[in-house]
Length: 191
View 1 (tube, rainbow, N blue to C red):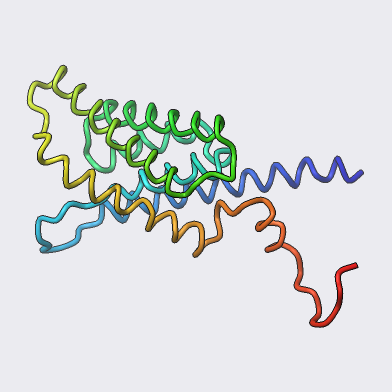
View 2 (view 1 turned 180 degrees about the horizontal axis):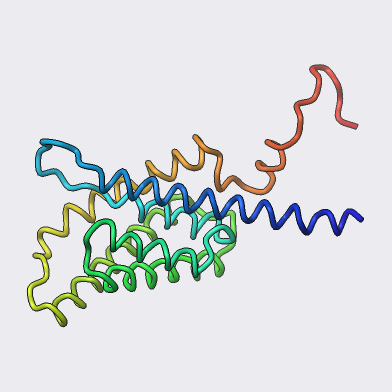
């Protein structure tokens, strides 16, 4: 009976993780799309990419391909990017990150994930620029994309730290199990 109970419980946990993933990406998109008032022309990091990359690398079971595709298409629509080109480039970069996560299972270096997520975003921007150059003729200047890439690369570890240590998402299975257990009474030995 415990095997039957584990099936629905595991499915509910996965659905809950997928809902949390979608809610966090939507929150990041709304934060990016919100009017900020009179601000200096500072580059704004792509917070949605940071959340997407974190989940694809650290919780891939919560980020299935169909849900990721819907979220990156919604990102294009909300942020006003080139519809389709942005979604395609981000989806390809995220699938490259998913391949890395599958080929190099945990424990992985956080710094290595940061470098791969930054390179993936740079590749996505490059592909998006190329697709725009082929189809529209006037893509943005590569010099203008540099600060945006740097701001996003610097935001990746900050967002990952908030998700990992603030919200406790993407912890190792051992740490997640320890977090679910009730604390033992002081002075009792583990037998």
